Image (cartoon, rainbow, N blue to C red):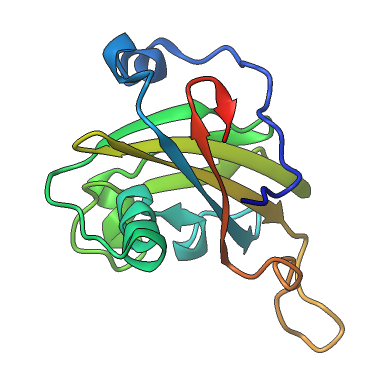
Length: 171
């Protein structure tokens, strides 16, 4: 199986609340499937900053494994962004962008004034299967010459399968 040229990032220090969400040691030997997700956003909070890791993991299972998740997901943020925060959406933020509830939704909030790329990794576990979602984020400064948002995901598309991992690395 070919794997995209994306290497495991170095470990980052995480806030205590994120460490508490990390998977237990017993889950370390589970196979990990990896899905790349590209999205572009501006520096302001809006709907395009919001992601649903469980839905993205279910998409992976449906497309690549031809399965459906038969249990609720365990979600763990395993790599935080370098230029902002990635956290659960509050109920008031969900209402602000037209969502009826915030359960399972996460928001990427870039640092004020930041323009550039960032990355977040989230593990989503369903009954012995872990899907790692690698979010590749492009924070843009505005619109292109035609007055449209810049399309930073043109080369990769929005979703793509990266590889399958085990606790020892790629297989």
